[in-house]
Image (cartoon, rainbow, N blue to C red; front, top):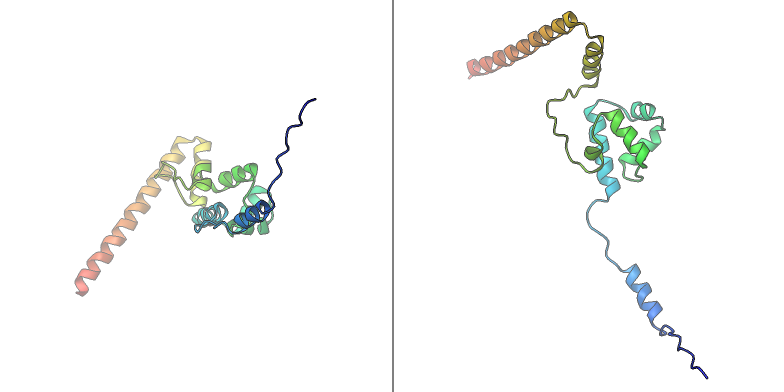
Length: 157
């Protein structure tokens, strides 16, 4: 006759101990991923000068969803995260992980960037040269104004 293998049964107190360990586990003190993502999303949206409604329209979502993402209440799914990064013209790494893009010379203003892209798409060399000359003139004017302000501050002393 064969002996039956003894079935191990949990001891009486094990369930209570495990239950207490699960409920008393300390939680992390730092921000959650959702909160960090929301802060990065809002910063990127602010840099682009977009409202939550404009961003929602750009990705085909509701403004309340954008609000939930920015508050850290919800984290978007992969496809939505890609759509957000495309609409805000930031890399997915920058949006999800906070790793900045290596291109520091990008045009940050949405309208200016869109205009430059349209001009490049036209591929008319004369128009591009005229735009570059105009922008160079505006930059020179801004520098001259800064110089005049510094000189006037020195004169007031």
